[in-house]
Image (cartoon, rainbow, N blue to C red; front, top):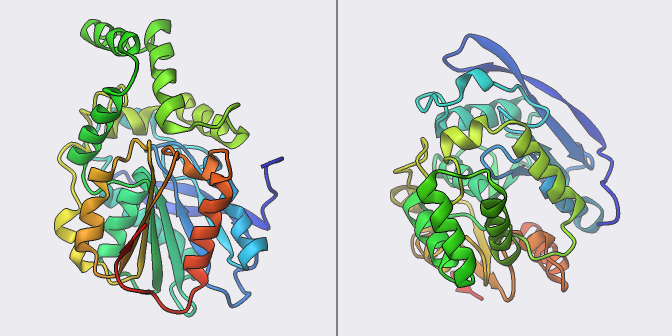
Amino acid sequence: MAEIPTPTLEGKVPFAIPGKGILGSTYYKVFGNLSSGATPIVMLHGGPGAGHEYLLSFAELWPQYGIPVVLYDQIGCGGSTHLPETEGDKDFWQESLFIAELDNLLDHLKLRDSPGFHLLGQSWGGLLGVAFAASRPRGLQRLVLASALASIELSIRSIQLRRSELPIEAQSILNKCELEGDYTGSSYQEALMAFHKMFVCQADPLPAELILAFRTMNSDKTVYNTMYGPSVFNCNGSLVGWSSISRLPQITAPTLVYNGEFDTSHDIGQEPFFELIPRVRWVTFPNGSHMCHLDGGGLRERVLKLVGEFLVQRTAGEKTVT
């Protein structure tokens, strides 16, 4: 997109942080009119800790499809309350914290009543979206799982499959640096960037909104380091062992699943969604990466069209895969 869009509304929602006795806040933006009568969509960003900026292209759902869009920064990142003193506290940084924050935001914006709300979760946001949808929350109309994963075990396997597709030289550098525990040196970072260019976002140059997300993550890695780990290739945080698979049959909302052909969210991580969610459609974008919605070659436009049309259609079909 040519420039960062201007929100219709933005603010901070007070959030009583569970178990900490702290009154924090959740920063949010709205694009469009929540009183228009159209069902809004709430966007769940990835990371964990990446912030909302890299999902700003979905703000186009308002002018193109009349769908109001709500984006927010999850606790611990961006414009929301930061908690650097909790780094390493795996008992605190759990799924339940983010569910409580999402519940609080929905209540503040009064989105549970008619016409309800849609959810789109990208990457880690998809994990959160699955967990939330499986509880059958009042008001949820439709669910979009964008490059999500059904479990952390499948996420780790997906990333290793993609890593094996890197040039041998890059793989060797990663192996050497990891044996030495060097995750910040220039050699490791260069090999990591090669991985990102092949599988995370193929747009060149990188879109402005993704650069903003990287800055958000790098400015405070409390959430990512504690929940995931020191590197995308070394998951040892509180998410280890996390799975949604047993909960997938409980999702009653019509669901759209999509990923990219060269996504770090490999097909093996999508299959449980398709097999176990009762009303689901799965689309894989040829030549797409983990950030299909930011890729070039018309992918950005095709993702927006797919999501927009899914959200405004009156009925959901049976299981289909594309």
